[in-house]
Image (cartoon, rainbow over all chains, first blue to last red; front, side, top):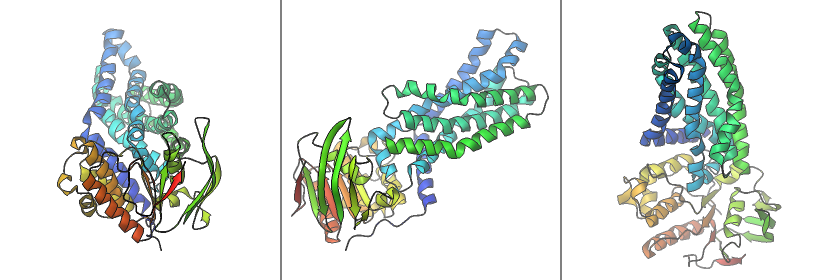
Length: 230
Length: 196
């Protein structure tokens, strides 16, 4: 006779426990989320200094600048996404949680979006004002940055899992992830530009949404495979 | 019954062990002994399913154990070198996460390791021995057939080793099996030694 194996607990409950823990840890260390938002706003603030006070030139640059600044800011917390858990042994316990490595990665990706992407969305109007973006386009800019940050959270989770344990993981991660984020920059900037010109931005938002939907199953699977092989 | 047949494992292109076969039955305990680097921790990670073996098979009650890794994970507890604690969370919050994964109640598990008074303290302020006890409290959450312990008593005082001894005895009396890597004496009466 042996003790019972842990029953198959409701997987959703365990998954939500993991997500809840990610959020609770982020709340206890608000500096990490704050650093990404500050970085985003500061990069947006640098453009007027570099480009000069010409409002038209600034507004022309705004869509691309917003996306570049937001994606770079969202990259900041990624190299610790699995690193901290790998160092203190938590990652082993998560891989033994019975959830499956892809589910662990999916929780990490959503946690990253909620603690980085969402605050970046909230800070977008500030950056829009600094870049002299037409106010009609602010709503679209917020939506675009939310979607693009979600796409980057997914790509970044796969990248963070792949570079885990690499000696220069922090350098490798942007090199791996940013080229893959180019489609999001193209569609996102085009959408904001269209909205600023008074045109329909919906098709671009749908294209961004399609990128997100494609990455939604693929990135956690890739990240899960990388975590398992580690 | 956990059976290993001809296990071999490669670490950084070095063969750590090969042709390793043993079996551990209900209520039995096995101490993994050997010099530093002999592969004790590696073997425990292989048995946990965290590291794929280069060769060999692992059987649980006669069936391939690693075929369904999630099912294998549910039948074991692994205490590794790291305590897997988050400094920003309190002792109770740290343990509560595992209780939500595996079931069991937090307060009795903390009490089993003498941590009841420290429940509301952040793990950041715990001493290294207290952190180790908090990691070990995971064993007391819910019953589970296989315990894999990597140097479980590092940094523990004598009273805490005794508390772990009580847990180990209860686990074995209920038919659980234990594999532990250690350099220190462990309260595992009648344990066999497996030299690596």
